Image (cartoon, rainbow, N blue to C red; front, side):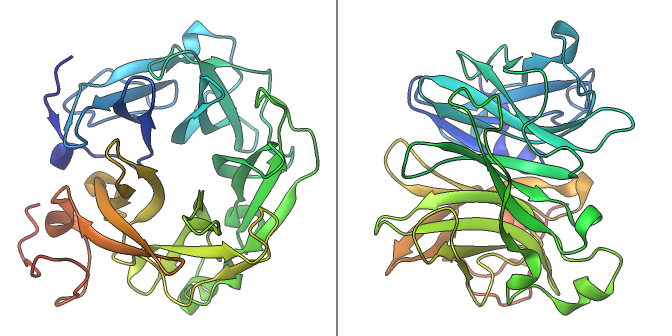
Length: 328
């Protein structure tokens, strides 16, 4: 396989990285990658994957799901796909919508990270009548899989992070939804959000078990500086919480929808997109550190932060000095 697509050139929303233990390669998924470079992708009808061996050089897009090849109900809003390796199979989780319906979340399944992915069941697992997005997978201490997702601010005003228990094949909801927390529970959410047309937003939940056994959840909202990622910690160490929010966001330079993964040499990494302008969104990959039960950014490895991120001059997060050239 060839890898001609440099990470600095990838425009992507909500990048999720699968570090596949079987192929020992990295995968990221989207409905569309750089349409001017790769014409012919159908945003609302397909998913594509990029493959990498080093997180810097990536393959051309490979189609992994095509609605026309299945009897699938959803034809709109193919947003924020995640791929999880779970019990020997690959599960692609995303939101979907049909005309005249609300957006809901569902998993597709395949025997390869490159598909072809197929629906597990006939319909979504998030509750009927709820406007939802950004489903992610979590397995609790009993071995029960859950889909954790956002109940959208567009419907409830104060966005929620909720969860539903799933069947072993991830195709069916087997219990009632549980609301884990609301966006306004966090101290770092800017007050201007509540006074504007948006309400309080919840985006992109992702759960991570820390080295000390504690459970944290990354999620995204807005601050005065723009789109941001924060995290909360479960006081019980379990999914139901209660969730205690950190005072300040983890990353607040108009970039978010973050997740964590380990490289094949054991480094903890975080991916996100920034800035939060659709035509300028780029993948950013950060080295992370767990210290005293908390999570810290060490360095951004792709170089995109220096070119594209929105940040106040002189911010001292990274090893390199601030560079005022953005390279648009």
